[in-house]
Image (cartoon, rainbow, N blue to C red; front, side):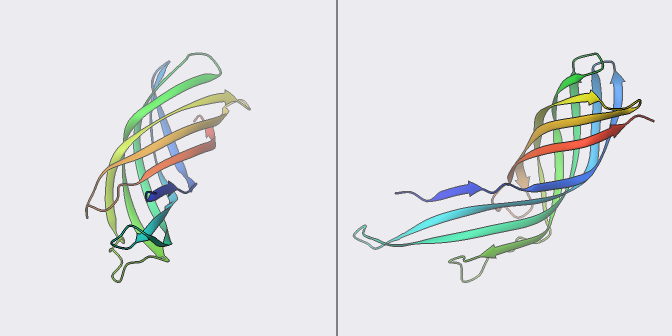
Amino acid sequence: MGNTLIQKIGVINGISLDYDVADNIFLSTGIFYARKGYKSDFWDVDDAGNILGKTTIHFKSDNIILPLLLNISTTGSTRIYGSLGAYSGLLFKGKLENGPFLNPPNVNKRLEIGLSYGIGIQTPLLDKTKLDIGFRNDLGLWNADGALNAISFELNLGLKRKF
């Protein structure tokens, strides 16, 4: 019986900007608020290996995310695209609940850098407006205090307006 770590489904909101480099290549950036978290179960055992109980902790964090993505897409009015790039994030609030820790780790004001990749589709709605639906995964590779790197799977839903 091992310890488990389960990512919680999070929420991401923000503003993004796309810049067309060519017919099928565009850059994306933006600023986003993301709520991330996980649940972890720890089994308490004695020296003989007998299970004494289970402790569950919940971690929630509020983050600012700044991605820079290169997107390659199909051409035409409806575009299917793939994204690859990097992101930086700042965890500005973290909360650990029900933890077995006497001194919880300092999780506030943590800088994180990672890899971001995803897929999506953009389809026309009005004259200069497109509906954008995509999935993105942010994989934390480095953070300033060496704590657990975040993994975040996101559904992106938005309207894109061409100016």
